[in-house]
Length: 338
Image (cartoon, rainbow, N blue to C red):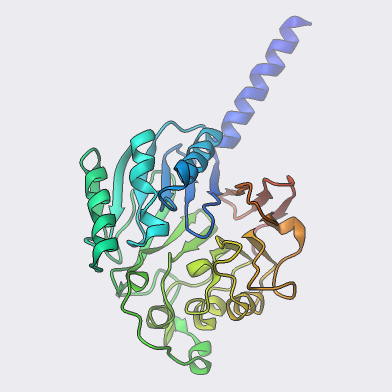
């Protein structure tokens, strides 16, 4: 009997290890209106996209480290700086003081100047002293083993040619107008497409409206995706229908704060996208109001004070994926797209 139990235990552990090796995991960490997205590939390597805010007694670093421990990793192999704003790069230097970060990825130097921007740049440069640095441009690949990550936009530039199988005309472009030009670091954001077999996930940082239009018009160079991280926390100076509707995501995830992002116009652009099934939110959006927010089970932090609940996504190479709300353990699985 003991021999049988030992055999069953060995088989269970082997199956668990095999499942983990075949699974892509993404943790959308709540940094209260910034971004911190932890990606753990089937190889076990990790990519952290942005690090949230500095200050707050190390709040965001604590939450990222907790997610890393939950994922079973002991270091961040790559930390991607989408752009040099306080809620994205500000939390990375304090994180690197407490948790190993091997390589930073960025688009080059900060394009903004001034007291605040210079302080951010100085803190980031200090963090770089103990790590490697990789500067990327559109068309480059991020070398995270086990997945394919293609840089689509960076430093105001875009990919020169459509991805394989993409490039069809985008009719939504004809119905959308440009906004006022944005010269901030938001428009310089690194944006990428992650592909794991048939599963596709896109993160465009805080890319703003006109740069979205430049990427997606007149032709769609990306194709469709399964999961769309709602750009710029769900602000209405991003999330043009020309990009959201062309991508046709099945699921959208918002890294909004209670009082940041969640603009009704952006929420409506996402909810009216063809094929959208659900919108998951890190916070209930006070700006969005009851008519635009998702139902309670899809919101990780539904009230204040915020408890820092996260959203977890696990995906298989056949295109199937599951999203889980850590606050209430509510989970929903999505079968591969036909």
